[in-house]
Image (tube, rainbow over all chains, first blue to last red; front, side, top):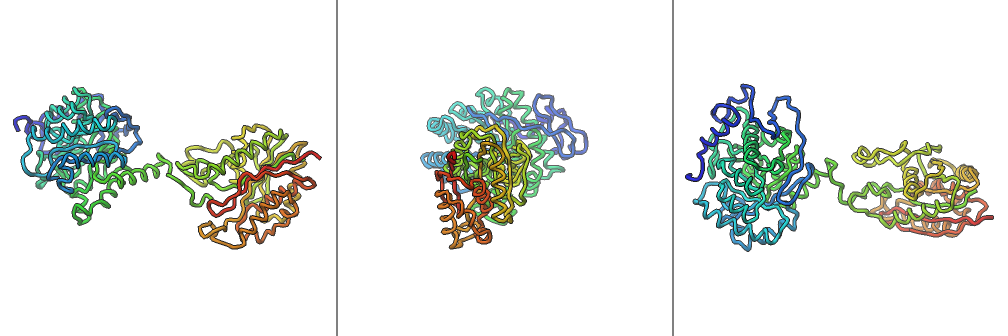
Length: 343
Length: 232
């Protein structure tokens, strides 16, 4: 961890930023009035507080702008031999590029390139992670000048190389462990995803994790990270928050953050959800990874209804259909063709 | 007296807003638009819009199409520009708006239970509204023209609609007045009373007809026609 701050230090830094004493995973936080960082960013809104909800605003990613009612599909492209869902399927670079062609055709708005699986496994250092991602990102950028590219990494060195290669967004799934990541995003004019990974360090699994109020903890962490990113110079229109299902959470926690997602969307920050085929779906329905699509789509539908705007997924076509359906139910999208009962 | 008349169907899908991203029936809408344009071009003192609705009555001439009963979210987004009126009259009013007509108008509904003679009388009354009266008749044929039709298939629908089309084409007003209300009801041909208002309004004339559209893309007979009435 030479290039990283330890998890404890990172947490300490955030506690100071929010003018709070470090505490045991934020468990006491709900007991006292919560103070937050001074910032032009949207104020955190916690459950039970009477803060007025803030409206969602335009989101800028790369060259593109997305309105508050647009629902975006972020397609997962793993440059790994050992990710949990269909391991190694895009390990080969040409297979990975084929997948990019496919997901762009299927309507993905964002391509999320990752070089390290979330789960424990063989060591992947920054050099190897860069080797897996940066060149590939450059190739995707060359093929698709306008598609939004994100890089899934917690390391600022990787973020820097990825942005130099053409990435528009740094998807920091491990929740701001490397404090320089936001600086790198700011320097590159890129955006950043501010995630809640709980007390976990990268590539570990949650071990008996507990929260007095998981959504309060998610809000504290993600809003503090968003404020930090803004202070580091990241364009606020390029900052996204993510509750990070399964990261530092048992299934009960992930169900809870899904159920209460409106608490996050009420902050005004665009919310990304990464639900695709995850363990909380598998445990809830008692199904293995290859049978988790219905549960993933149900969670997608609920999250969209509660205001999430970006959906990180393996299955683009099915997700697009679900999001289109939600958009039409909301009245944001006309149906494709309506004749029934109208002739 | 009547100087011109137009016949158009009145399905909800004639309203562009209601068919979603797909226009579905652009040719039907264009035919109706052209019929309305021709009607307005006859320089009427008044345009009377006639269509079938629950009761025989006159409506506020400022009445406009209300989408809300058919698509609540659209109705909320685009409230009617005038007092809501029954669908055929609202669609007719929209056709007049789109044709650029801003003159005097009368919106008249006619009940499905109105006997042919009363329909004809109503037509004669409308013809006497002014020196130059144009009539926009919003009327549908049978809705039982196929297995996927709203009323499924009734074999009698094809000859029924063919006879109506022939009568309109030939200006055979007697044949329109002779359409049997009971058969029309069985065949879900909601336009029957409106056709008979047309026949009554044109009594004593010999109209020249242009058929602009005749098809049943969804199992309902749609007929679009322009009727020009030469001066006596």
